[in-house]
Amino acid sequence: MKINQLSKLANVLSKTIRYYEEVGLLPKASRNSNGYRKYKLVDVERLIFIRRCRELQIPLEQIKVLIQVQTDKTSSCSEVDLLIEQQLEKVRQTISELSLLEKTLNTLAKSCSNDIVGECEILKNLTQEIH
Image 1 (cartoon, helix red, strand yellow):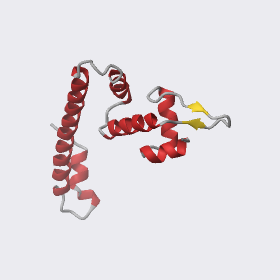
Image 2: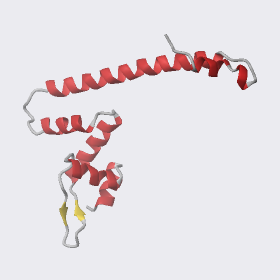
Image 3: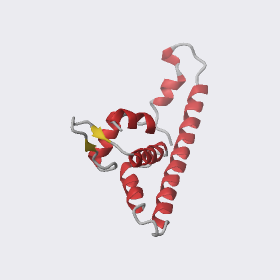
Image 4: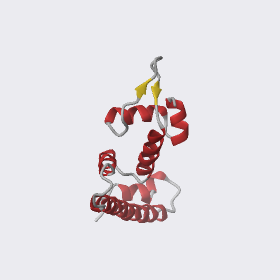
């Protein structure tokens, strides 16, 4: 299949497919006599895997590790488990940071009932250090 077919099947942009080939997440495609890239069903599966990992915000370097560990079907899942636990911790940290951000913005939003910029409590609060 050609790159546009692969793109549709895996729901990944063609330029992203080329990039994944360039960085080694996807093997370089073979070429037809006319120079077009030629892909196989296994490439669709790999791209869906990569897309799903990216949806989980797993960095490309860690996706490479996940792809590599799949080559030995009898190896332990400990590396995969650790990687997912680390990603989960990052998500939890982000949630915590976003929660704090929400509280701060909520406090700012409620801090001003004035209609004049010169008396705006939000702007005054933004010039002060938060402790």
